[in-house]
Image 1: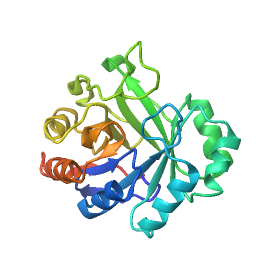
Image 2: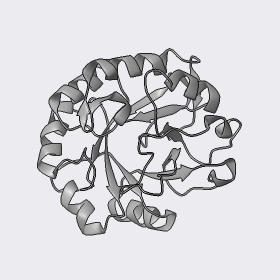
Image 3: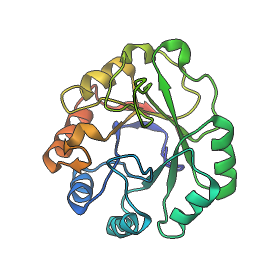
Image 4: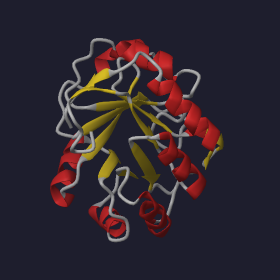
Length: 225
């Protein structure tokens, strides 16, 4: 899903999103995650500035791809971040046409977030390089995304995904194994589920989450990204 992911049988992919400090980043690296995410959305408790993200990105030393999360961004907003942070992937909350335009403009792989509450809402086609499938936000939510809420993972069973994808929303070390088994997810994305409080990543929770995800149903087939 990074734009160069191998095909064939592999372990479940894990992304830790909303990294804000060295403790969370180092724990993610040590646990062997596949991607780390930086949030560039002002209303999120996990928001980082481009300068903060740049400092953390340098600590990666090219070992793990970084994903920048944006909500309905204009080109100037993305360009401003990319001038400071050499992100490898863009994760967008927007519509498919806009996601395709961003991909063409910046030449980076684009993952498109897609909220669902029923099987009929699962995408059947995609121009994005990847999809992040999560629950629809509650009606009173002031930000997009799963908002730490899980959904019925069984609606994903047997789904013919039009692009490589990650499962997100309400995942924790206690339920990620069940989520993978029920959904067949080739990769998972966690944020609040590995925090001691909003925006504060917990190193032990990260380690437990990765271990639980990798110790689930075993190796799964990952589509080439």
